[in-house]
Length: 270
Length: 339
Image (cartoon, rainbow over all chains, first blue to last red; front, side, top):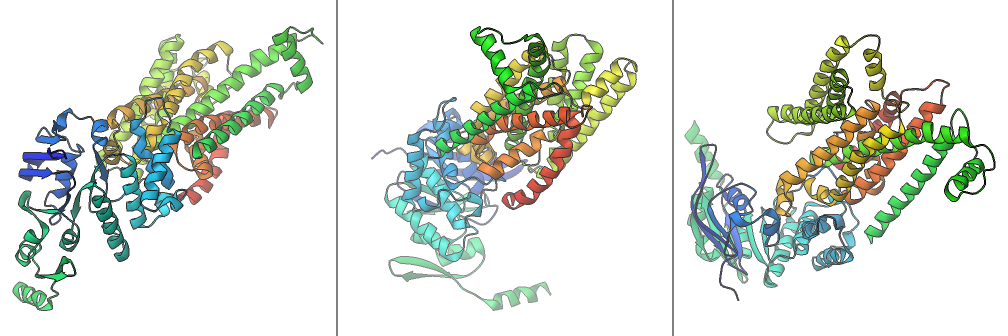
């Protein structure tokens, strides 16, 4: 087992047009971890991910696999980390197999076209997540959950061990949310490392080895999920009340539906 | 395996192109029969004895029809390939060399060149430079209003850029000699392959062929580019490099088509759409197939322009007349796929 973290962020500050987005971020992602990044919209979690992926330029001290991020080209980085975006809105409706095959393109020489081996790797990735029957379907016609699964297959075909996912369950229907989480969990048990942002403390409890909570550009907590996700934390970050209960082998987060609270607020404004 | 299918489509299209090219060499005001043509080929290639006097036939084929057929193939391929590449680079199925203003910019540049210099090379360079300036201007206008990538704003930017260079071209027309230069510019701009000469065609064939080949070699990156910059970068593409090289190649190919045959619209817009409807959007197939199908399309349009009426119809007018109804059909069918 190698000891150096796959991602290491040291004292990261980032501003966007004089607006401070991140300050003093220290963060590590170790091999084999599933880390959930929690926080409300605008807390800076997407920015952090984009900085790590070099999608936003930075000179900050970020190391990928013990090497400076600055020294990586996009191509080198794509051989270390795969990115699964929240949604994909290309106007061109590619076939599922072509979509997965895109993971192979930057591994080819300039004049080379995808070979039989690349097709096999792409098919194996689709089989791994049980989507091989959809290989000739148009990506645009898939459900949100199927799209995320295909993008996961593409990341597997990229032959890397670290996946960064931006709100993987956003916009998925109820059943697909759970099925996608189960799939991520089973990939994690095979040794894949995950860093994912999420809006659901409950999902973080279900399947993370570690949770990082961000608030107003600062990491406010970084620990095991059951240590961090407490009623107090939920109230502080999301301004709602929640019970943390034990259900089977998992802790679960159950928000409390409190209509009186809205009435109080209403009276306050009057 | 889908790469075997890819090859199959390409081979079939290339065979059709070869047959149509041969027919174009034979049909015209003076028809040449296939047997005469084969006798002539035999005589030329294998030095078999001449069955008749081939002087007239040779002159018709080599001096009149061959340059024209070659030019139709080159320009059709150049415009359709550039169209497909622009659509991928701007992630926008509604752009083409015409809509982005490249053709207008290149025609202004070429007209400037004709005015100031006899030298063919200067005309080509100026056409390319102003073609490139026109795309740049379209992108600038498109991004000035919104920060995000907007399909409609880029099209509007292109419309503005095209009308700017059309106006500038009018100034050139206004100052041009009304007895010699002006009619030459006007007739050339309508789009015509009739002035093709073998030497000129071969000269322009080199840069056009090279840029088409370049775009074909880059085609595997275009799938990734069309996912948007962030996803392409995350998959390992050097987005800036690929985009600038692809736009330069597409602009070069379509600007040179303007130098040779004036403004031939719609080819770059409709051919990629037709191919996407038939075989899907994967650029590994779309780009080379655009080259072949674009060539077939323009060859057919040229045949109609020569044969339909006793006088020749300028091909640019014809491609618009054919292109508009096709585009309306394509728009209706393709809308679902864009959203």
